[in-house]
Image 1: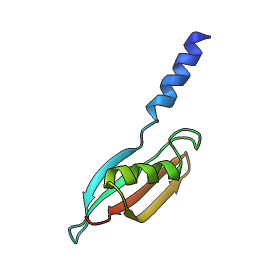
Image 2: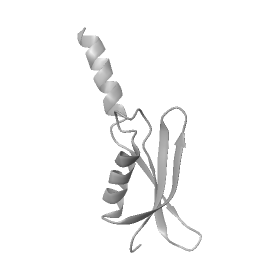
Image 3: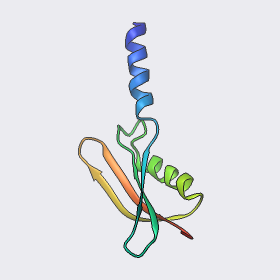
Image 4: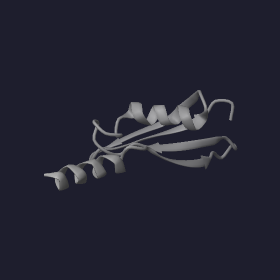
Length: 83
């Protein structure tokens, strides 16, 4: 029983933090793609992506694209306000 619980906790913790990837738009603005893959009960919700975007941008941002694909794959592209 302990092994099953431990494996479950490791699986949940591995998706606990949304991934971010920086990019620069053609007009020179700094942006980020925030990926929140996983079930809605872990780190997979759009709200989790938005929260991470606020952290990365240190405040406000503009969401320029949202992707929701089968298999619990979600991401948003954002441009930080004032960037």
